[in-house]
Length: 457
Image (tube, rainbow, N blue to C red; front, side):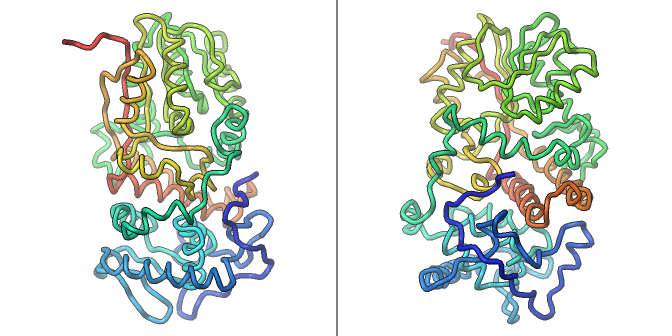
């Protein structure tokens, strides 16, 4: 399992991190099923986490980063508590709390690697949080002002760039996808619902407030999301459907149940195996073909194309090819329905060359589009046009909260699968980091319908 690379990682060491300071106890984490900070970290498995950067350069960068961090959090609505009793932030007693365990290590990591260091320092246990998603939401809501503008303009000079081997050219894409989706079907089954859907659900009104919606509604809400996309694409009896990104087969199953013939492509061998098993068990093997194939290699003609949260893995420079492929295979009169996580257009432009913690540890090669980018790419490179879209970011925040709670409750089982404490802290950070983006409004998720109708004059 490869989850790290050599870009920006610290020197390896077999020494255990220092103990927690007196008075600090991670007992609350244990009570919730989250592993406490690991006493030792395998430097071969986690070269960027096992030890913080050290040496004169790292110390100088760390002190500068520490000053910037403290200056930023002084004006934020949270509490940052230090071992010496110092408390920063404007938050009251009910504000989210970020507890510094090893401040110098934290500062050296963010001084060396920016926001990558923020995530790595949590993985290592340099800081903890009473409510991780709430702490990260405060940062997400202030993302444009955390770093002074002059320094933001210089960040490309000192932050790491995307490794060439992680660009989503055809020779790299299989590896990029495998690093996430081929971790283990068992891992995903420990926090996904029975539909094995790994994308935003669409909760019915009867489920109640999204902030407190219960797990028991999740499977139904995932099917509702799928059904809306199939409806918008006009999928029914006899439809020839192309699905780009198979997942674990739920959409293909529901399309086949409508009488459609489905050709679904994936680059995950783990997903392909489980999807085919589920499809065969449901009796639809004659209607659904799952191919281990890059979307660019798809041939044929289809009445409808559906793709759920796959464009995020395409990569900025390959969006034209993605939509040109859909345009090429779509039959006359056909429709396209995609579900896409989106970000504000200005932030998209500012970060399109950035290499982030999510790239390094979760989704190598990925990048989120803006709605404006999708509209622009399709107008410039295809005959497709966006006809309808629906934002549902609050539904994703609710989905992620349920996944997070389930993941925490299954910590022991996840550990038995071979995923150590560092991995579990990484995965928790990823789920909470994502939820914070939707709760703050920094991220959205859209269901977008496209077709070739001429513009109305």
